[in-house]
Image (tube, rainbow, N blue to C red; front, top):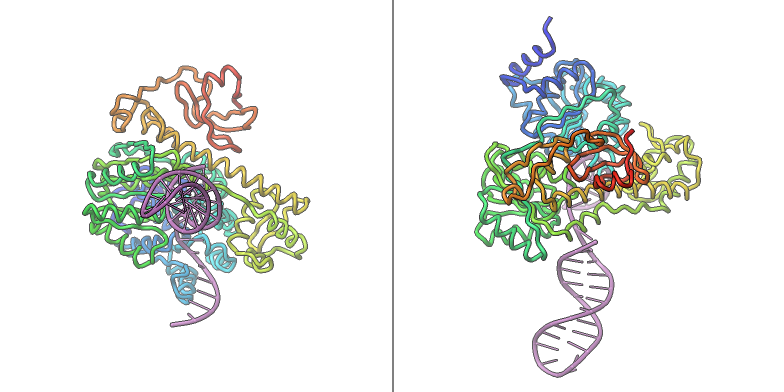
Length: 543
DNA sequence: CGTTGAAGAGGTAGCTCTTCAACGGTGCGCTACT
């Protein structure tokens, strides 16, 4: 009898032409073959796609791959087509004709195709779930799984419904893949996708070839001048990340004026222009792209020599993802943040939430008087509101235990017997909770920008992968500011300890330094606590 | 929450200063019209 590992290695060489599998890939494939739900947090170049490609082929029955961008779906299909002997892959999305989508389900049903790629919005449609249930999905994959946490709460609520979809499909073995995610993000992915007996595999957050640095600026003008000066001096190609579409255009224009081959990229540009910039950057036709966060997913260019941020991101998770596009070839690359505390304000604006209380009351009234489950789209039509707004609120009301959701639609939760006003209050509390957590993530970003210690130690600590010594390859190390943190003997609050705070409730220790610890509280998000105060005031008890 | 730009105020020519409203990111899918 051949082991799973042997079969996996055979498939890797025959179907894909790979001469070996990495240990993280093998561990994941073996866990999946044993039916265990698995989350892989691994760097982009690690070969995450290989995990589901091989695991999918090991099991009879098709593999569903949820992918956030249609462009990414086509990239993945192309990758499979170019492999020596990989099975057929199809996609279901709005960029294809209806007949092509129908054909995709047909080939899955008769076993002509193994893989089907689609966005979470497709899985929001009961008829699509019915088709998939009929073909007997054996492996369910969520690619770029950080989107569950990053986008699910407002921007793309269908991400938060994937767990229900998985249940409707009879809970096939589920795999989530991402390159970024601090422990709370991982916990949320596992919880939202309703993993059973989850296995979480993380591999190497550290990217030692990236030279980390931060420059603080007083004025917006000084910051802009410094960004342009730095980019002019760095080795191309590289990226400048900005906070607004307008800034993307302005930086691109200013850099072009300096003689650089520069272009702007943001979601407001025509699709044709976006494709052109993307392709030209990959083909070495551009020195620098000034972009909003729209630029990135699916950009796998090995020789990006710098990623300069002209503004902070809303979390270190996003920051890590964006800087991760530098130096994938392993050669030295520059990663620099131009920081103004004022820039945190825009991020706060984006996380502020104000649920429409009147609409909440109307949703509750409508659901209460309905005969049975009401679908999102029907509810939006009845209430004459945008489907997006309604489904966003439904997500909030679901988390607030007011609404239950199933494949057939929304109903009032049996655990909720209150009035519309009560529901509005609960929605507000739920939104406030989310806002507190998001704001605490912004504060962690501030912490990175303002730390006087080693940047890499701060960054890796955030991702739960502490570095014992200062890295020697960041600005604070170079300036001789960072000092080795001494391991504390008998630390009462080591990393991963569950604690309770009188005011903030329960949380988990995320990182421990000699004078302070960082705790992620379930209802407050990240908090940094001074050890001295913890001891004096007896703030924390371990549980 | 902070930036930006237009409009108004002051005081008498084109300027500075103040005030205030508007605006700010990420993609899917669908529909109507070419």
